[in-house]
Image (cartoon, rainbow, N blue to C red):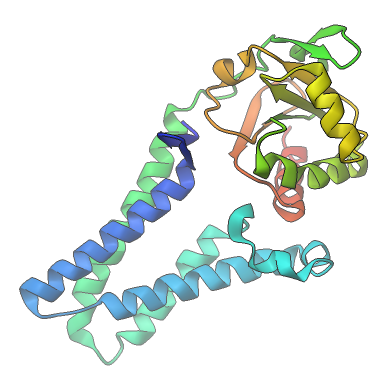
Length: 270
């Protein structure tokens, strides 16, 4: 499962796990405050905020050429550009340092932190275990803009990125320039943009209006690909290795930097 749907709201699984872990960690901190008179909450929030900051800064620095060309994108956290392990390690160091003289807070802070980490990492591992390992490219027939049809498994043979999108989807529209740039920069990777549920004319009008000329834009009027891959929200981007096995998936908007990071990981697959 890559997302949780609450009515019209679709929440990426990693975001849901992170929010849940933070809420439960703070619930444990609140319990210690009310029942034991010990309040690790302020230190816990410092750990969370500093950890987030460091995780983001390291990611931005690794892709500084992309972020510095558009500095405002540094504070646009919708791209999910973080180094999780660096953030958690930093939070741990901050917690140790801030409780050096407050020994009474060490145990409640450790309990809150362990609960939060167990939820996040345990949930992540469980979700990965439940996901089909190396699922193949579904043999879905899609329609090119010239009216001809092609099966998606015809694109197998080199690393493949399939983007599920719609013209009415704001995050889909925002990430299109990043996908177009990546398609031009990585000719060794096959990109396929599978519009979900719209007509050929609607897609043609959208591309013409926004001046987008991109190979392999196709439509899937019945949204078969969404059903076959369990993609409950858009945009969803699927990354397949050269043998057509699913390597990773990303639900939500991709920035230039997060997309480049995932492409580099995909190209390392053998």
